[in-house]
Image (cartoon, rainbow, N blue to C red):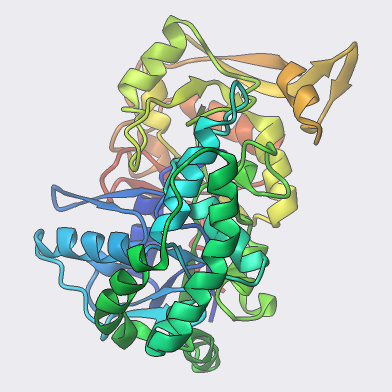
Length: 430
């Protein structure tokens, strides 16, 4: 059977939630494999809107096992706030349907404090972090001082590890002229939430490997997007984890050979939240129009997204670095009514033409987009479920994107509704 990894092909906010929800009907298990509660997915199901951050999108569909993998950093208080919020909408989450990797790293209150303190002291070079402690938690993981979910089973170990962790972070807070944090501010909170979290824990790598050998279909759900990858993105304006398809394996404990298809989610235009380079950004009425029609506000932060034309160079780079097999193109309907559309086909830098985004941040900020102009369309694409329902100019636009990014469109989404999808190739098909 085929297992599918879903990743963002731009800077996140591409509409992964709807696509993952759509694919979950074809899967048995849905796995989150990186990121934290800085990522947001919005699902619209039978007229009800669900906003998820930590929970895999499959939780709102009955009969599925949802898994939070070891590559995710977990704020347990945010997790249960999210579980309680969707419970109020009629979706019950129990250990029977949600499993959490016992070796996943926890986000503690100190991490958010450090995150916000550093961002406030960065002067003019701010990263645009959500301030929720994701970066500092990943740093602790790499530095081997993190508190992992399984540690909560041993109160003595929790206390000792928190003391060691605070030795590092309080030194930083002192240097930033911020109040220090004591173990008494953290340990009792961890021990209080432990009885609720521990029943969800298991070695999820064992479950996933067994499911794979039994022929079950596994859907891997990424957060953020390829250009926020800590290695291949617009560093340092990136997230603190690898967002590409390779992380689906390491962030879940299932080997890379078990991932058969990589689906990249890509908007029909480009958006970005926060700071950092954005070659095709439109700081004019066209960009405002795209943002207004597309309701471009962050699911987690509510921040207004920056909007611009489709950047084929960036998406093609994501296709190559993540081995994307096919694209799910979303929000085509937002472009309805534009008389002309532009696509970035290359960058110009110091008289040279580049077909990739350079690694140096100063160069990324200086590249100028080279545009190709295509005619727009006046008819609507909203709600289309077959190619025959699309205007000819819209089909031409999609076909040109395929040529420029060197990757086929597997799915085409034409509205936030789950049913409004044109299926070209089922990623779960052999």
